[in-house]
Image (cartoon, rainbow, N blue to C red):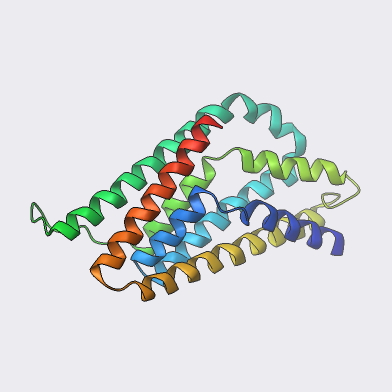
Length: 207
């Protein structure tokens, strides 16, 4: 069980620690809303990682050939969603700054909506399950994925590792939001995060 636990923790941190477009959006979302909303969004990312870890542990390498033909379309879909979120973030910030009154200001996303949004974006990335499948195969059937209990420990550890890192990012976003409480600070934060998410989404498209 210890081998499965360590393998799961390493797998979870391995897929979560590199901060990409989803991580950048998570930080920016928390800075603009609240730690509660950001925490729910963070758990949405971790839930997707945990689900993909489960699929990889159960299906192993058999999932890779099934996902490879649709990997590119899903990657494009994820980038398009992220670009739309970046554009919406920038538009909302500029509209709030200019004091436009063309309509009521859009309320911030609820924690449940933040969870579902980040869950959906992360699930659009098939590279995650390919990553977990490669780890499971690399360990062999006598390793972390040798029996049902070991697979459960592996998946739970991967989820816990991902959740801890995503919650750390959300906490950083909450601290950033407290530090930049003025209108100009929030505007710069929103525009900066929108630009970063857009850039990372474009890299996802051309990568």
